[in-house]
Length: 201
Image 1 (tube, helix red, strand yellow):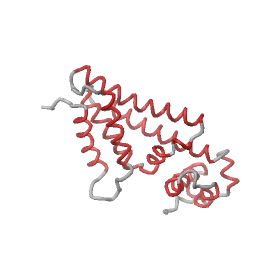
Image 2 (tube, rainbow, N blue to C red):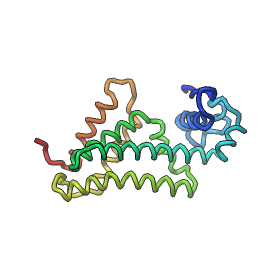
Image 3 (cartoon, one colour):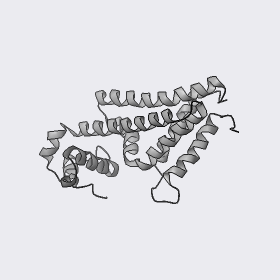
C-alpha cells in the first residue's frame, strides 16, 4: 500500500483523513483500526482523538468531504454550461466521471461503506446523495419537458446515468491508455444516449 504523506508535510486532520482513505481502501472500514490510521499518518492514536472522537467520525468526515466536493464540481459544471438540457447533462456527466476517475478511492469508500455509518451519519450522507441525484433529475426532467430528451423513463435514466459514474471508479486505472477527460467524453455520449437526446446539428 502506498503510504500517505507524513504529518510533518500536512495538517494533522488532513493527514489522518488521507491515511484513513488508504486504509479503508485496502482493509475496509471494519478491518481498519485506529492504530493502522495512526501508523500510516505518522501520528499517535492520542493525537487522532484530538481531531476525531472515533473511527466513525473519520468515516463521516471523509464521506461528507467527498460528497461536498463532487456536488461543488457538478454544480460548477452545470452553471458553466449552456441553458439547454443537452449541454447541461453533458457537462454534468463529464464532471461526474472525471471526479470518479481522479478520486477513485474516496468514491469507492462512499459507495461501499454507507452500511458502516451509524444512523445519524447515514441520514446526513443519504441527504447529500439525494441532493446530488436531484441535480441529475432536474436536468433530465428539463430535457424531457423541452423535448430534447425522448426517454419515457426519466427516473430510471437518471439512476442509470449516476450508476455509470459510480461503477467506473471500480475498474478505471489512472495512467492507462485512456485519460479521465477522454473517458468522460465517452460517458457523456453514453449518458445522452440513455436519455435519448435529440441529435445536435
